[in-house]
Length: 177
Image (cartoon, rainbow, N blue to C red; front, top):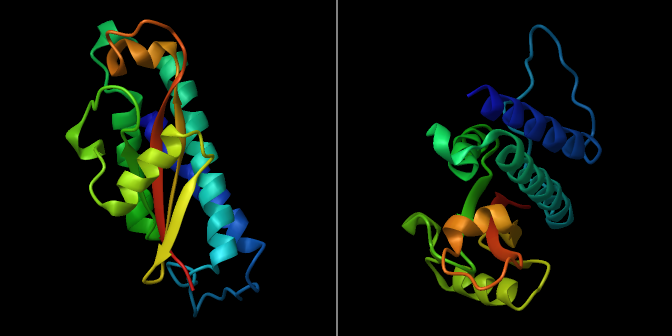
């Protein structure tokens, strides 16, 4: 839980810094507290925030998996631990994050593509595109790759013939102006 808390604090700090550079400062007084959530960003701001959030989640997953996860210790998988962080980000920032199965075995049926956007994202990521996005009804949905390294392949691709990296995905959905 300490790792999940540290990840959440880091992520929210990064997001708040990216928002702070794009909106006018709001005065804070003892009588008028700051609003709990900032206004929805513009599409360009949301794209940048999604890029930063994706990079931080990807790096966190890789580092936590490498340094802290051991199969024989009965710990939660790092991806499962990060889902707690995803829930906190959604509650505090109204930004949804979700893992997406792209290549290899689907480890959790919740990670399988569920709609037209997600099926198209899987195809785009399999083709090597750096991201796939769509904006509909005031929501930016952006899918980008997550690298499955040799360590990950033990479970995701158990019958593999090579140790070549494979791809999973992370979908980030956030409201936009």
